[in-house]
Image (cartoon, rainbow, N blue to C red; front, side):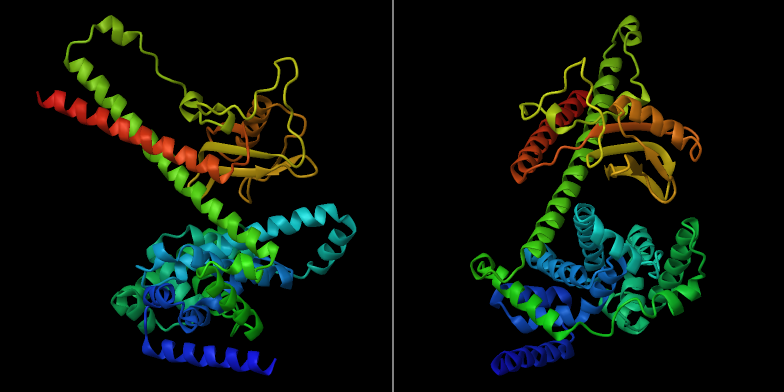
Length: 438
């Protein structure tokens, strides 16, 4: 025990020396990757740990869940280290990962409480006094443009002066001050839309003043650093130092990141396809396509343009077949639905995976309330959601699809197919451009 404490003390002293050198986050991460330098990673935990712990604490009510989410956040850093080493500042990225990890942990805890109803009542009673608006702080902060979010994370969440933030970001101090003020104003405005009335100055003095603890407990920091070193060396599975719940959180966040990349790739594919189609139509028109042929071309409806594939609709995917026509697949509690809506408020999009609660209701967000979908077909759910949203929006268009969990192999296969399709579309665009020049 004494030797363990001495080892922790040695690492923390070395971390203090690293911090004093003023190395960037990217330099520390590169050093950790190169030589498994514990002190370099400990410096990252020292710099950003209080902010990460603050995010997790605001979203999660249980101390054990907070510790798990904290550790998982920094282990995601290890898994993504090679792609992050070029960044000078990690605070903004870490804030996003911490929020995502804590939200995943909250969903896991909610499922656990559902199974243990007696415990759920006890925990709910103990959380009455919590500030329910605090998670909104991180939610709305994550929606701000990066140029406003970065100075808020550095100055308000991590406690740096504007001069220190300017040095880390490579911006003039006046730019930091202006963007910090503008970011606070935007954040206050967005919170006001969600029922939290607070001025920009009050945000800086009140909400952020106690947003993060002064320091991370030594035991939590040391266990996180030890796990990070073993994962970087490929020994964590053998050593068994990462609790199962933490490992599950790490994998869940990494899969979410992969899904986000897949979504971006799908958007690129869609835009490329639109450009290709536009090029083809333009070329055919210039080449003298008959007017009658052009008139037979129908314009897809808004709903048809919104259509996106579920897992079972992908080519070559035969894992699940649609339900028979005489037995419609009805929505049940515990299921997950992919809901996409156009025409939403700019700051409150609806395009995500939603859980059907035990009551059969789906929470569409603070701005849109809840809607009861229990026992409905997907088509009926679309109609009901559209009617519900007309109380908030002018002309919403709704698409509801069954969410099917994906394996890593499914995701990789989809990405490979999308990359192949993008290459083919680019080739087609190049051919069309060549024909135009001719």
